[in-house]
Length: 125
Image (cartoon, rainbow, N blue to C red):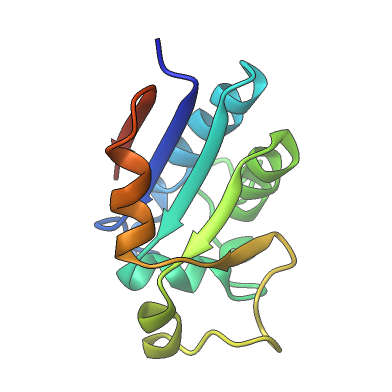
């Protein structure tokens, strides 16, 4: 059985907010199950780490909970948020505009190193 879940956000896009709630909901559930959870933001998904960006996106038509609310739930449950440094640079993230939940820059080598370990389940979106 896995004791860690690693999530890669790669093909999601802020342009399609209806797809953005699920990974964070699943991360919160996994963390609540006492699993270690890491979420890696790559490509355009790094934009979700810019202050205000995810707060203005809603995965549901009722607009009850923003994508940022889902992100906060996951982080408060224990999920760690990492991003590719190159993608951060490409999409304008810096120390002045990044959300406080950001846990650090980690590249492809760190991601691959995590997912080849025993006891790790990998989800990609």
